[in-house]
Image 1 (cartoon, rainbow, N blue to C red):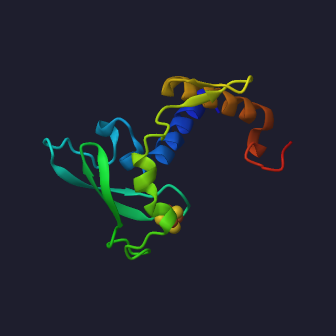
Image 2: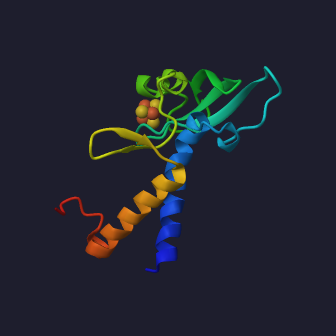
Length: 146
Ligand code: SF4
């Protein structure tokens, strides 16, 4: 596998994983799924899915001024019938919390935290994933490895 190919696959996977929470968790509103620039004070309904477990319940969120006003399960979801569990519904409090971390943080060896850019974070993870792939090859995903 070439470097360019593995990096492209990594970025595709990362994008897919992040996209689920992006509709409500993205600090840059213009990048959120289904987001349309609202007129001042306009309440928008946007769709997304909960990233907290593998069920991936879909929802509809009412958003105003970059804040979620309310969240409901998507009644058109064939599997959930519009239901969401309390953990998923807690997204409103989580996303609107003033304590929410919205940028990548790097844990230094001395225990302190340092804010880093998304570019630095992605490069860091890609470099480490590439090293694991080079070391373990096809068995890189095996959790039983030391
Ligand atoms: S709402 Fe609950 S069940 Fe649905 S994806 Fe989120 S955590 Fe999972």
